[in-house]
Every structure is written in C-alpha cells, then in structure tokens.
Length: 149
Image 1 (cartoon, one colour):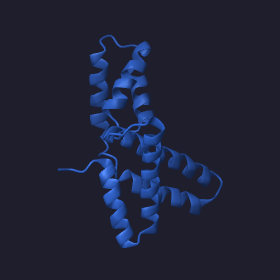
Image 2 (cartoon, one colour):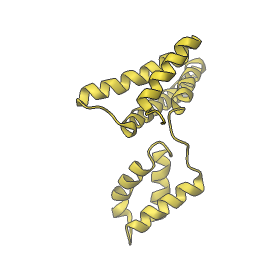
Image 3 (cartoon, one colour):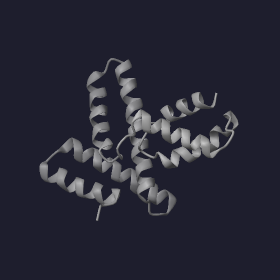
C-alpha cells in the first residue's frame, strides 16, 4: 500500500537522519512544520491534495527567493534555494507533457460549451484541482487564455 505524503515525509526524514544528510533533513522538517502549522491553523487533518498544495507553495516561495537572489548577485544563496526546490519536487506527482497538458485544457474547455473569457475562472478552478502538482498553474493559465481568445 503506497504511503500518503505525510507518512512519506516522516519516512524520508528518518532516512535523512540515518544518512546524516543535513540539508535534505532541514527541508523535510520545514515541509513537515508547514503541514503541521496549516493543520493547527485550520483545526483539521490534511489529506494528500492539501499536503501537496503546501509543498507547491513552498516550492513557489523558493523559486521567488531564488530569482531575487540571482538578481542581487547572490548565487550561493540562489543555489541553496534551488537545492531545496529539488528536495521538495520529489514529493510532486510526475509533470504532464505539453501535449497532455493541452489535451486536458481542451477537454476542460469542451466541458464548458461555448467557452469564452468569461468562463476562464470556472475552467481554471476545474483545472487547478485536476492538475494539482502536475503542471505550473501560471503556464496553464497562459495556455487557457490563448485557447479562449
């Protein structure tokens, strides 16, 4: 039986501790803390989709920080952020190819017959849940906008 994401984080933390991989251990602990914080804030237990959303948010924050560090000429800090991104990406599902992504977008547009730009919010809502972790949502948004125009 496959592990859920929280169990996988716990197991990976143990293996990082055994391997004395401090960088990986730090990132995994940050991810676990973010998940736990959200659970406490919302007084709930997160399922895999919600844990995935937390991890995606962490990756987005690190990408933004990496860009800012590179712009400021702080390549060593940018490289550290990039290393953290690679650890976190391990927990994301496989990315869709461009062809598969276009097929999913086309199907979502077809579901909303006669779709126009007014339907973009509804279609993006559907795509966001359907493509969680499998695609960059800004790319999906750009592709959908081009398709609707």
